[in-house]
Image (cartoon, rainbow, N blue to C red; front, side):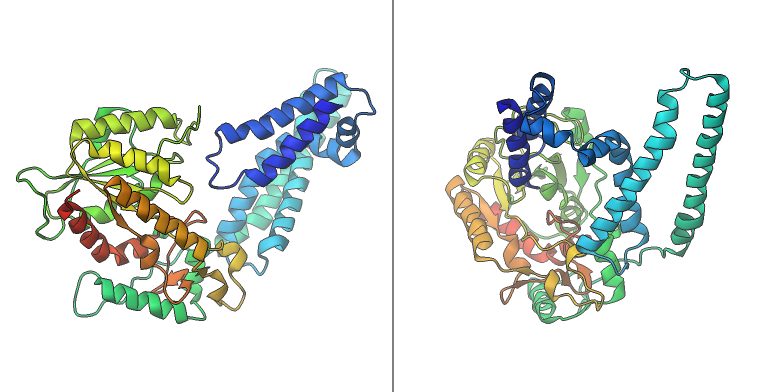
Length: 450
């Protein structure tokens, strides 16, 4: 009995503890895993009067248990098709979620009943019964295929291609915005009440404005060398401190690598840009244990490799990027270690979070509810990163100050969405908009005496 209750408690606790910033999977994955193991143990050893056995033996629980694998297979494609093919649906938030869940349950039950079951029990019946079931099976398959042709195909044909990404209005004939022009655009966006249908479509499906991720680094020097890019920006004098080859290294996770394409435009022609980043790993090297990211890399192993590469490459400048889940004290240790290579460090603070487009957009294309509030606690978190950077001897660029004014962090600036996901990765128009302050921060970091 105790094992079952403990298992339920651990699974319930995981619903409250696991969040987008939890570094999942990692040590936090032990909560639902241990909970499930305890429930299995309780089911094997406990009597029928155990609370956990009673709960899991209920009809609805057994129904979802039977279709669980089919539901696992069906739910994701249904969600993806809905978001891609019906971006302007009147349904949003909880009503859309309930509808999609219902569709997934129906599809899962149908495939369990007419696909899984006939295959599981074939060979155990006489030929006549098998022939009848085979006929029913193929009839069901034909019905499901017809559903796809009759319902999904017309929707796909009616779905319009994504519009091109809007660009910020430039003045004075410049190829990029100055910092004052960018901040004028931010202030105007903070006052905006509505957006265009084109911008709404990009907020719901931002695939066309995501930064390129064409450089994937593995734990090998060869992959790092293959990803070194050559900048082709203007001949701007930067205080390198030495003559000859100049190298800038992006370090961290996807919040650093998103700047790669813009760095190649911002840095003077001939400057080399190395990428020492991976995804879903904390660059501070917090103890994740055996966390494996979506590329199959062990986060701790990649962190050790990246630090060794810094000592080998000896960059002039390291640009560190991370999300708001990173702990300042971990990053202080990291920066101090990186600076032993002789490199200067520019620490980029995280961008503010904002509501998900699916939950905040309304039918009238109003935008105010999608803007992130200039939350005092969140900004204090950013200031804490700034203090940590100073303590570690790094320059600091608080990105939040470039995206928020008048107690508002606009979701759309200059007609373009600022973020491409709930984790606050920046869009290509937003990254282009802050090139000037990024270049100034790079110059300041190189000129610092630290």
